[in-house]
Image (tube, rainbow, N blue to C red; front, side, top):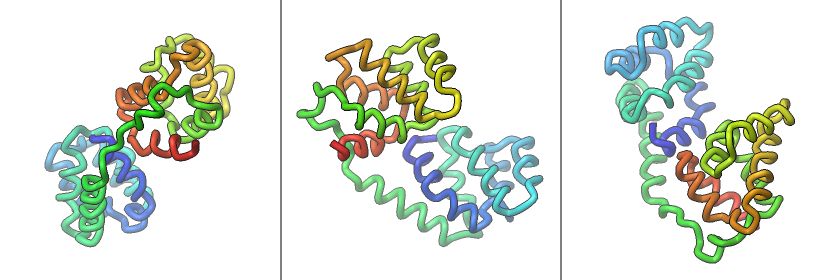
Length: 196
């Protein structure tokens, strides 16, 4: 699934769950179109409440390939108000100007504050990003072992390690390229740059 569609589903998660989108024909349609497997369909429909069924569906959907979002939209025939809202958000995202790293920031080294904000934004994606930044597997494991209780702290430790290894070469340009390679939504970098 396209990262921007994943981001839309994440932002709309509570509303989608409160509307009970996994009830009715939605999961059946996704199964019919080959987006979810029979086991996933059973797992979704076996959940105790409509909110839990929707949560399970939204957990499964992002990993189901490039057509998953488009087919999910088609499956919402019983929920036209949700479909129109998702369509509207998609159109807004298309209209939104593509984010490019400002030229005056490309060779700048990120501050502790900016790295901290980035660590907050990355969540579980931090390992992939730091892999693209050049940290090896052992260094990533060390960050996890030394900070077992907080993903944000693990990410921050990794980012600080990267900056120490690279020195002046630890620039926003390198960070931007790693975020793009890891398919992190551009709004993450936008948020970090707005903090400066």
